[in-house]
Image (cartoon, rainbow, N blue to C red):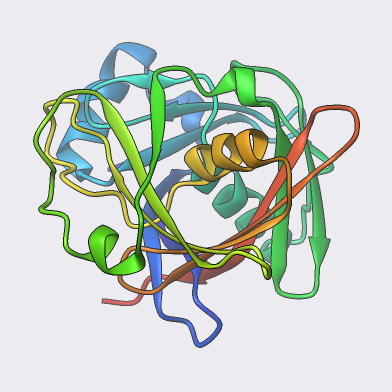
Length: 220
């Protein structure tokens, strides 16, 4: 049986929300051909396989597709490795090298908007309209629905709908989509997503964007 850690990533300030993540620490023990089936069986929006702890190489899977980059698996894995006494400076998903840093209870990873293909953001006139959307809304393709809660403060209300035909109807917290929205708006954001999650973002002059949040071990 594969050893699995289950975390909640991008928790709110009081530990609310957070997107469930499966972490397979000994990813090399799971053949690549079996990973899609395992990710589907687990049913989390994403499962991350740590293939080489020294180099930080990882493989990220949804129940239906592999991903070159994703925020909540990398934030969650970086937090877990620090809790085990092996905090990485860099993680290496297929998209490229991801810098990692820690600031109190916030774990940060840094990526690029071009690593987030196939997702569309759509601004709504009000938080109430975002909250009132069915899960999922009509239409096709990955949708990040958002509205300003307080534009001057950079506070955003968002919901995420993969709409890719698997069992993930709505994503509780999505770092890659938050990164994309930050790239489009060109400013730091405090995103409140799902039922109680918080995602923090910060753009840098070199075009990279940090995504950060709190992580908790999921306890049944």
